[in-house]
Amino acid sequence: MNREEKLADDYLKNIYNNVLFEPDGNIPPDFLINNDIAVEVRRLNQHKIISGKYQPLDNKSLSIFHSIEKAIESIKSENNNCYIVSIDFEQPIDIRFIKKEIINRLKQFLGNPVPLPCKIEINDSFSFEIYPAEPKYSSTFILGAMNDLDNGGFILSLLIKNINICIDEKTEKIQRYRNKYRIWWLILIDTIGYGSYKSEINSIKSKLVIDPVWSKIIILNTLNGEFIAEIT
Image (cartoon, rainbow, N blue to C red; front, side):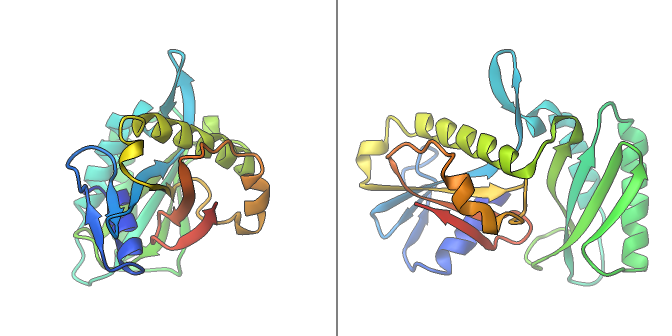
């Protein structure tokens, strides 16, 4: 179970008693509620076109992502506090320098905590924010998201574009299985807006193209798994 699935699992089990993970094995759905509602889970992140296809930006920088993730999760603290680290960057970056600086700055934070959330700038092209997280992870610091500022834009347009991409991708993925279950839900773990758009959810909904197979789309915050919005 990856981190997005864990957040969805916690959310669903807080509401429903009968929640199964991967009821049919490593194929859709990710979860089954009350033997009737099939649920798929996906990270809601930014994409760009690479070789004619939409690719997640965090796949483009996959080696950078894993390198930084490994570095920050190696930092240990004696207390039980957990934190989410969200990174903003512009390429190119010096990964060795960045890793060293992130580790130093996070250790400084542990030694002298400041009110959260807080933003730390390493240089003009790389900064990160620290948010409190529920103390349920094995590491003190968890990498929540990496945002490529070269591909940014207004938050609502980014959300609309990338929610539609996620819907299309998941709709295609479940085609072979959609008739097996009567109801399908899609849970998106938001790493773009962190729920800052709650008041605009009706505007976002009006611009989405949702396949009828999805009875409900639920958006959760990647920082803490909290409910952001429901689109039906």
